[in-house]
Image (cartoon, rainbow over all chains, first blue to last red; front, side, top):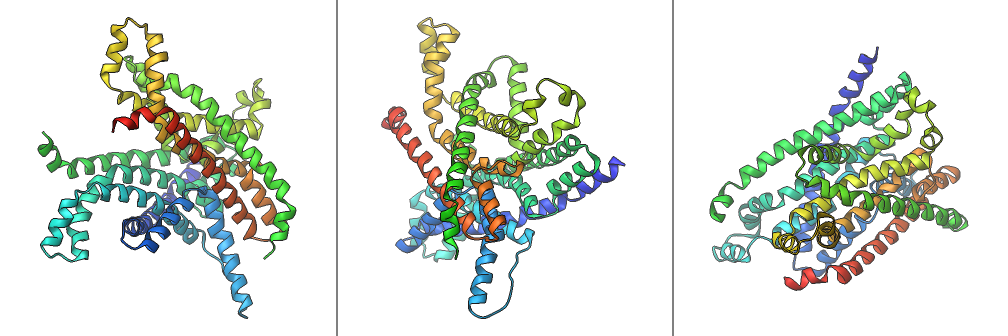
Length: 229
Length: 229
C-alpha cells in the first residue's frame, strides 16, 4: 500500500527536475545579460543591473514567490479593470515558480558571471579588438569559453541552491516531489517516512550534480593545469 | 490601492519583525557556538570524527530547508517513542521545532565556512604556535579560532543574510513572523499586492542592516587581511 505512494512521490520527480531546468536556463540568460550590463559603458545599464541584483538578493525566496504569484496578477488585473477590460489574470504555479526562481538566481548568476568576466585578462580583449573581431564574436569566442571555466564553481553552487529552492513552489500548489510527499504524509499518517523520501530525492540530485559538475570542472581545467605547473 | 489597511496593521508587522529578528538571532547565536568546535573536528586527524561531521553537513546542505522543517515539525509525531517522551511538550511546539531546524541547517553551512577558512590558514602561524609550546587548547583559542573567524567574515555575512531570509519559512508552520503576518493580512482583507510588498520592504531593510553590520565588522576585525593585498 505504501508502495503506491512512494511511486507517486518519485514520479513527481520529473516535475521538480523540469522546473529546475527551466528556471536554470532563465537564470543563466538573465545572469549573463545582467553581468554584461553591470560591466557595460552605459551608466543607465550599470545602475539598473546593480539595483536589480541587490534588491532581488535582499528579499527571501518565499516572499519573492508570493509577490510573483499573488501580487503581480492582482496588480495586472487591477490595471486591466481600470482600463475597462473585465479580465482576471492568474499565473500557473509552474510559470510563476520558474519566473521567480529565474529572477532570483539570475541575480546570483550575474554576480558569479561578473566575477568570472573580471578575471579574464584585459590583454585578450584588446588583442581580439586589434584583430577586428566584432563585439558579438569577442563575447562568443573569447569571453564565453573562459567564463564557463572561471564561473563553474559559483555556477555549481547556485545550481545546488536552485534545485533545493524548487521545493518552495509546492507551497503555490505545484504537484512536485514535496507536494506529493505532503499528500502521502497526510494520507498514510507516516509523515516522517515520506518527508525522508523527499529529502532523499533532493540529496540524490545534489550528489549526482556534484559528480557531473566536478568532472566538467576537470575537463575545463585540462589546459590550465599544464600551464600552471 | 489600499495602503490604509497596511497602516492600520503596522503594529502586526512590528510584532512580526520582532519575531523574525528573534528567530534569526537565536538560530545564529546557537549555531555560531556549535560550529566552532565542529569546524575544528571537521579538520581533525581522527577519520571517524571528520567523516561523521562531513556526513552531517552533506545531508543538511543537500536537502531543502522546507523538507527538514516538515520532517521535524510533522515527521517526529509519527513515532510513539517521541510522543511519549519527556521532550514532547517542546517538540510539539512550532517555535521550538523552527529554531531546532534552523540551528541544524545553518550550523551545517557555518561549519563548512569555518572549516574552509581553517584549511587556508598559513601553515607558518600554526607552526609558530607549536614552537612557542602552546597546548592544543591554547592553540585553538588564541591562534586558530581568531584567524578562522576573521577570514570567514565575508562568507559568514552571506550566511547570516541567508538565515534571515530562511526565517520566512517559519510562516509555513503557523508562526507569525513578517511573512506570516503578510499572509494573514492578504487573506483577511483579500488584498494581494500591498501586504507582500510591505513584507519585502521590511526584509530589504533588515538585510541592509545586516550587510552594514558585517561591513563594519570586516573593517574592525579583518582589516589586517586587506592591508596585505
